[in-house]
Amino acid sequence: MKIVMGVDSSTQSCKVELRDLETGGILGRGSASHPPAFAPRSEQNPQDWWEAFERALNRAVETAAIDRTAIVAISVAAQCHGLIALDEQDRVIRPAKLWNDTESAPQLARLREAIGAENWIRKVGSLPTAAFTIGKIAWLAENEPENFRAMRRICLPHDWLTYRLCGVHVTDRSEASGTGYWSATENRYVTTYLDLIAADRDWASMLPRVLGPDEAAGTILPDIADRLGLSRDILIGPGGGDQHAAALGLAVEEGDAVYTIATSGVIFTTASRPVHDLSGLVDGVADCAGGYLPLVSTLNAARVTDWAARLLDVDHAGLSKLALEADPLASPVFAAFLDGERKPNRPDSYGLMGGLTAATSRADLARAAHDGVLLALIRGETIMNQAGIATDGRVIITGGGARSSAYRQILADYTQRRIMIADPAEADESTARGAAIQAAAIATGRDVQTMRQLWAPRYETVAEPNRAMADSRTRLLDRYLALSAWSGFDGRMRS
Image (cartoon, rainbow, N blue to C red; front, side):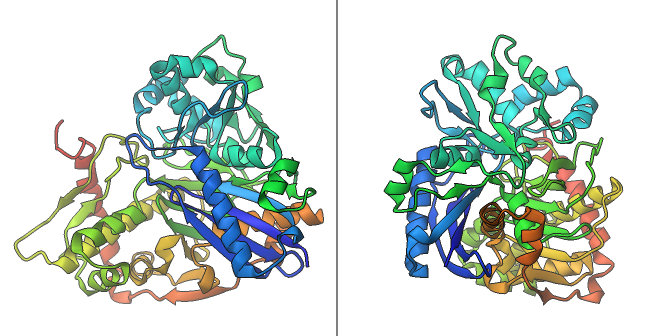
């Protein structure tokens, strides 16, 4: 048996899954937690990612009960946008600033003014927010000049893990397109934008080479292979961003609407042509298969219902039960900007709840938490449609929130479409699955599009819409938008 490994190094944890190269069947999984990180200063030590990867790998091998020397290829998908700065000895200079770190909002705003919003969108496909890597580089230059001067390589999270595995400084199209300084349509870096931060730096030498979706990064380093007990001829794939790998794992087709409820919330689909939404709300990033992945992302998703569960002293099943007992039209409305927000771009906002009365119940609060997450993403799908992006295919839910009966049913009611998940036992494993598909393509020499279809998951309907809720979406969305406009004044209604 030959085996491939898919890695999902997210904000919260590292997940490793092992699959049979011939059949795509799952053999084993393992996971290990990362240290928690919260906005506005959201940072993690990359070494913690590596240690979590080693633990997750060992657990996956134990559950699979296989000979780990049978692994022939590895691909790593990871949280997007973050900044890992390396010195001339390739040592990590400081903790990584993550996608949900909002400290660079002032620097990003100045870059936006200098470049021009429309120019930036037309060049890179997105209007960067504080999440994007370029703002974090500008923050480093302004706030830690010694570290900035010491920086010789710039990595994203998946780049750094790939580098640890094979010693090659590379990235892929999906991750490069989330930096703010790479053009997906032109397939090149736009270093003139980095010159606005420091014109005297040799940026080209600091940036990773961008690999194609079927291009191997290299083979595993001998000392790493020995440390992990793996074969020395393992191929390492180009890797990718978490949502982009999830699109591979789900075999998403143009027109599908994928709702991801994880640390962040995302609504995305795939596209064969580049997308440039001049409103700046839709990110027209590249995908892991040679195309594009238009998406709208929010900072606040599963953490909102985690917070609500702690507040109400229930587990997630109990929170779902409460939420489904409530009357949505009688529940408070919640602009759930607990960590600020990025779509819309309000890094300094706070959560804000309106419509509280003496009759507000625990069930109403549970419902408001779920609505605060989903209405933000429903708004995102509406904006995508206004930008000409079709989402009239399947509605797919993924991420940790995909296991929640409340998220499933409320999404069905608001979209008035059936909600589907891929392989119910793998509802929140699509990113690792996508990374394994990429590893299989590298190992077999097939193109990743072919592997995606060969390993396409089966789908199951998990929620049908309540037709009585058909007229409620507009009323609830209007209430949400009205309240979230106030939350733009940093949650304290200061104008």
